[in-house]
Image (cartoon, rainbow, N blue to C red):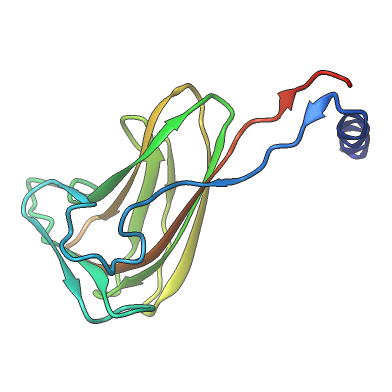
Length: 173
């Protein structure tokens, strides 16, 4: 591990390896202050989403309500957003504030067409969630936020999305 870090430091110093710089991605209505809820998509039925005055910061948060009918099972109701195009090896870091209102676990998944990685934060108050994800292949990636196993209401606020490109070999000067 120490040898690998030393080698990377040397390659950076001589210009053979370009450092990966984080790029903050556009995430419309990240702070939930824009009118409406058009930036978010719902999946599963019934699920309702609305802006409410129970924000972590600012005036508004997004409230997601699920009912988890027995026919739906867990993980089939919630909200989603496209994160954009990623290349294999790119990292994306999504951070946001979450408040479960029903005292139940909330699931967060990221991937291309399904949950390739899952986070399961749990608390009863506002908590900051930070999800680091590495793309396994080129493609369009999304984030899904859902209940698991029972009806659950939760609040979302203050999103930030960063893309960290994979390390790229450069040309020596």
